[in-house]
Length: 273
Image 1: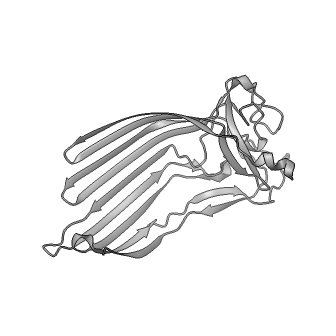
Image 2 (image 1 turned 90 degrees about the horizontal axis):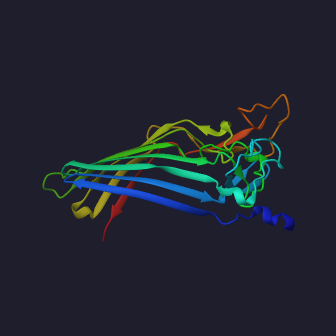
Image 3 (image 1 turned 120 degrees about the horizontal axis):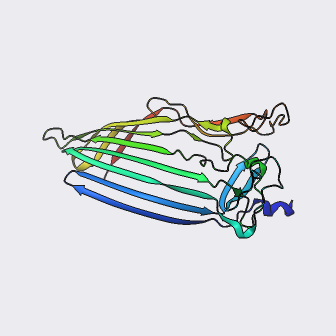
């Protein structure tokens, strides 16, 4: 067992990052924009294959591996050490806008487009060792839990209630996520369709916000979605013909999911002394 300890250790991951942004504001309106690029070398990836956790550093190869990183062999797909490069490239743009059209009312809107992908030719470490065949779907694909498009919004209204010193709170926010894969091996059976989440909050606040009572709800429309899908332990089944389909790697492997939180609601009391 001691001889296998090295298989559970990552090499250091490094990131080369570039970012450029600008911000504009006039009266009640502000707008900010940013563009970014990140190059990950020795990208650290931990994957459960149904039996053990695979600890793998992912790098790219600047020369073609001729599909050796996409087959079931553990020996093909080797890259000369001098030809290795970063294994993951993340680049995109972010926009954020805020508007205060009237007293006590604020509207926020944000959007991100992000392409976060493995290189077309990938290897297992900086020395160019072949990628583990369990990760054969990775080359050229979007990373797990990395939707390309995310849009967020929120509206907050805090009107004063006459001359009483009290104020009300009405708040709602949303998050729209593009489809993505929840499994670090990117098996298509672990995909999550696009979805939207909504949260809301209403409340009453005292003078100078010395106290407040708020009724809130999370995921108020009770949207079901997966946080992560994974290979069910020791349920690999048959992976040989006729159970091999390149569109659905894993053969007769069974899969499980951890679902995200359902609709939840509650009451929050706040006080200042």
